[in-house]
Length: 250
Image (cartoon, rainbow, N blue to C red; front, side, top):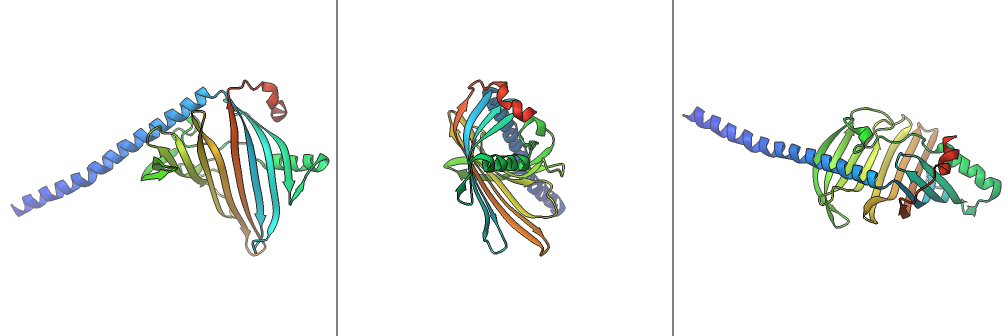
């Protein structure tokens, strides 16, 4: 009889543990599914976007001395198919506004250092099946109740990321994301990336990107880079002509 009772107790303890886990797994699948659907809806409705960007770039040495300070203003054109063109308007380097040949040379340097390939995002069609998701819990971000969903790439590659997404419980929009590359260079001691979103014209769009990168090669070389890139003045479906991207494609 005691053995029977013990078995019953074990059975119910197992059920009490397993049911919440099963429910959480079902909830997670539904959250990820609806978040993907929401991203797909946004991508289908916005054929193109034009917006302004202002970035602040700072390089720091070992003793936190500023080695380089850049403020830049850009006009960004983006098409539904992923094409993007960045028009540099102003560059201020170490307090000096660049003009003429200095401006052109600095712009070329920024373009050369920019990544040409896109990150495979967890909720994108390209990222389908490439990520594992976990539900970490709930929070409130910008007065909005959100689910906190962790994502991990199944591939250790530089164009995949690991991190957390903050997904609105009401609309399944991404409100915020914190991430890092799933594969880092050996000289990268630390890298933290984040993207904040804002509600504009009915859509949650990127508002501010941040990067904090530390590179260290033994005692020989140390560099800390901080970037903040803010996006504003969005205009959607303006009918951007393909000629805007001609230089980029060449």
